Amino acid sequence: MEQLAFDDSLRTGFETIDEQHALFLSMLTDLAAQIEAGHHRQGVLDAFQGMKLYADGHFSDEEALMEAREYPRLPAHRQLHEAFRSMVMEFENRLGEGVGLVSLETLEYLGSWFIRHIRDEDMRFAAFARKGEDRST
Ligand SMILES: [Fe+2]
Ligand SMILES: [Fe+2]
Image (cartoon, rainbow, N blue to C red):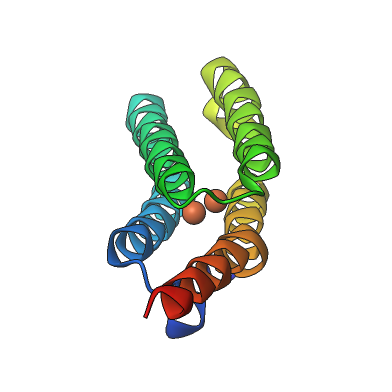
């Protein structure tokens, strides 16, 4: 499995957000390890659902923060979160039909999407928020 670890290059400077990003990626890695180890269906399904709930919570927290900072790109950002949610839902349905249908490639895909999203989009918000803070000092 490709490296999906959190590192300093992914830090937005918002501690809660950074912690959530790191934890989400480690949940994904754990899930991949479970699948690799051939864990039983219910365990994988539970871990997948945990990951999904966690992503949901993270997206809501992030959107609330963006709203509080009056981030103008929030609608577009929200759409990206929505796209991730739909992807996860589709994978979950497939998982419900059989664990074999969700491969490590699937998780890698979700993980690289998430990392790319942090790098390109969450960071863009962080830069915007930093500018606002500069102005207020
Ligand atoms: Fe995020
Ligand atoms: Fe985001």
